[in-house]
Every structure is written in structure tokens, then in C-alpha cells.
Length: 140
Image 1 (cartoon, one colour):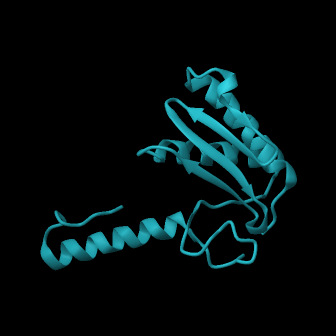
Image 2 (image 1 turned 120 degrees about the vertical axis):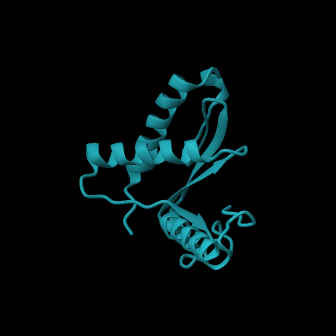
């Protein structure tokens, strides 16, 4: 896919703005670099990095509740795309095996999050249908 050079910079700018709104951390606690940023949304610290060989942006969230960061980052990407990148589309994906940092591996390493969720829901339905319960089922 296509990865516009300014997408990462614009996204980090929006994320810094949101960080200032939601976090009591001083601006000096942020780490801003050419290809990475360490940011806070509320109490949640995370790292955003370019992964150019995959034409992707990687987000690593510290702590037990990454969903809020993931949802906010999706919203910020949507806004950046709507404002200045017209028809650019994106998807959220999870790493699957291999080393996504390795420049030699450029395919087969990412699974769209929507597919993971669908598989989990399908398994839950199968478990309920089979056993009439889902008490022992772990989603993730």
C-alpha cells in the first residue's frame, strides 16, 4: 500500500495535541523524534513508530488497557486522512509471528484487527452453541 510521508508527522502532531488535553504530564515528558514518539493519553503511556518497510505505523501501549489508545489513534488517523489525504484508507492490524522489525519480512506478518475480532466472536458463538455456556472461554 501507499504510505504518505507526511502521515506520521501529522498523526504525531494530533496525538501531542490530544496528550496535552488528557494528561497532566509536562511537555518535557514526551519524546519526539523523526521516526518515533513517546506520548501519554491520560495515564496511558505509549510509543508510536514508523515501520517504513511495511508502510505502517506501529503503536506499542504500556499497561493493561490499550483499547482507549487504539480507539483514539484510529480517530486521529481518520481525521488526518479526511483533512488532507482524501481517499487514503487504513486498517488496524496486529502482528502475527515473525519479526515485524525485520526489513527482510514484508508480508504475512500483520492480521487485520477486524479479522481477529470476528474469529473470536465466531469461536464464542461456537462455544455457546456447543456447550450452552461460555464461562471457560477467554477472548484475549
